[in-house]
Image 1: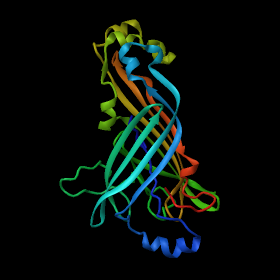
Image 2: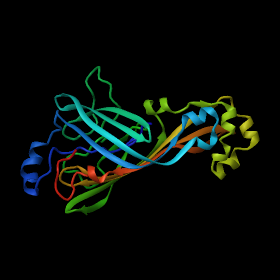
Image 3: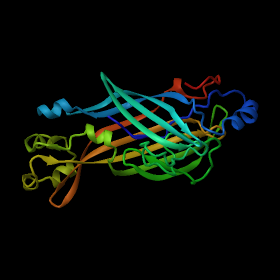
Image 4: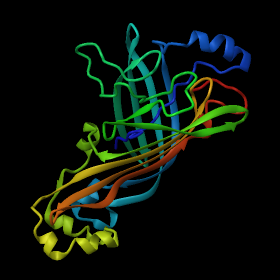
Length: 298
């Protein structure tokens, strides 16, 4: 099931190689002031997820509709597919692995090759509406402040990227940034994988899964007045914390928490039911760009 980072999600631009401080200062930064057209980078996250079991939902097996605390890994690949002067077309593709399921989330952006903010694509190229915002990576030497915005692909909203102070990991000086995004789900790929409606008979069987405050509002009279099938809307809620190297712009760590909550309209009000997707994950130790020995970023 797609996310936005997050779902997704501020991605990670691995900078070809990270050597010693002097080389980084005098060689790496001047050379890589522009996103290379050869960029093709990967990273792995791990964590837990709560996922909708579509087969159980359709069969009426309400006991197994929601699979909770499932171990997950998330593979991510960031690749420049073409360049047009100062603009790079970037594919930012993720796959969530949960048990035997592999759930893709694919996104395409037009990025300014220097600022790495979203920009206008050439005519005939379809990209997501991230103009003026970061979506997949931070620029080299990120600013310590609230100058940036973030494009949330789940809601297709541009939200503030908040500076939360500084930190240090293994001798690297870091800026800490946070993202909070909430809104109706607009990611077409995600909406395609979520049920737009549910037969009333099946919906009634879900009542036992609802939180107590929602059950109190979903009275028999309220449920009886619902149409058949019962239409759903979905709300995306994303929280990200990124510890970003002050020199390179490479996130040393990212913690990503995302939920997609199902809603119905009943009795003239919107009732938020349960999360049909909840993900909590971060960069795996093997993917950290600055381990104890400064090795090449995957």
